[in-house]
Length: 260
Ligand code: SAM
Image 1: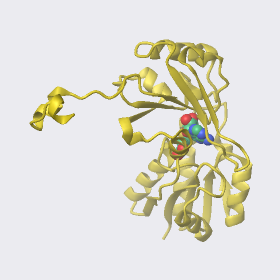
Image 2: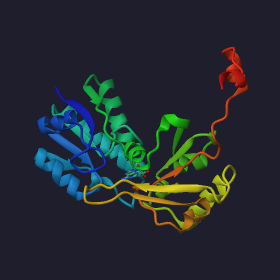
Image 3: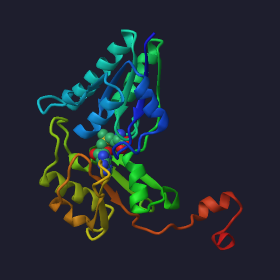
Image 4: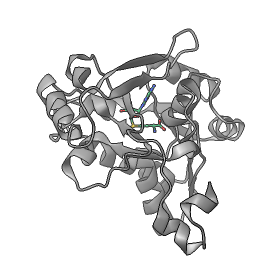
């Protein structure tokens, strides 16, 4: 009977895959991959010659929603034909990635064995390279366009991570970049909460061990001048230092004075 495991390959080539993820790839009948570059693809195809890239499903001619649906139907079809299938997705396969979750959901509903193994996501690399501990004051993460278009409550005491900043406001789901005007609108939206002088960071983890991370700090107002791409992530450090909440403390029989 066919089965599916979705594994993460990490961000940096070869070294960030988990041992279990690698062994699933080596043992699979078919490995479908969504990987950031051709070098990563050829590395996976050395682990298993039955590697098929799904990267070619992306196209400027159609919505990314259609591409993701095609990824799911390609994977589901192969499992139904009796194969032991692995979906190899860069980073963590379940982080800002619809297709792996959906393929698992559909296959489980059909009675197949389907599950996910975690991987090292871009956010994990970000915490390491920027020296941020998400537990220190909290951390919120959003897909940038969702954040701009939907109601969310921002926590100005915590870090805010905006994923897909390089697609800010790109609602057609067809283009692979944003525009200066979209970035200006993003700045103006964020200026509801943050002063234009507030420092933000653009982070890009390297895909190859020979490359260095991009860590660029600048005032929020300069965002529209920056070159962004599909692997850019924006970090907004907290605006305020943590403050004790009298109401919360009261529930525990404490006061600000007694807790300090
Ligand atoms: N599943 C991936 C993961 O676990 O990291 C995330 C996929 S999501 C569709 C793509 C977004 O992840 C990018 O727009 C960016 O925000 C972030 N990302 C991907 N590669 C990155 C990198 N090398 N450095 C920093 N952020 C990255």
